[in-house]
Image 1 (cartoon, rainbow, N blue to C red):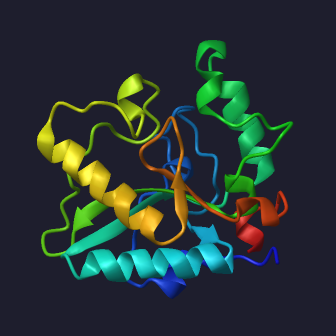
Image 2 (image 1 turned 180 degrees about the horizontal axis):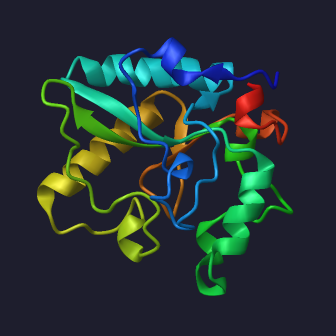
Length: 184
């Protein structure tokens, strides 16, 4: 039940911009030794259906994060200011990312490769990151809402604080893992 599938092996046209494998993240440090993204089989299969659905509209998924070892959750927790800790998982409880059931993503145009305009970038710790924020820009709101609609149609639940964060609806069926990415 805890086996993980590499997303790009199941969804060949997915793009990866795994921010924790670079310094372009909230810590400013590389937290992943390699930039590979994994999910549990049910979530990966559902994400493939989302991509198929979006692909018929000329859109693709770009993944910012998926499975995250528990040790990295500790690092993120320690690097986050106290006033913003509600945006990150408490490592004592574990993260849904630690279960391989969560994906952080955005959308891009398959023909041009350009990212669609969204309300915020990844790991934005403001009210604008909420999936329910009353985004005044119609294009940004429409793109965010399309992503949410298609993800929810295929069994994912949006996080209340982050428009880009989706949990597979059966996330609680999977254990917390701390397997390093280089061992997968």
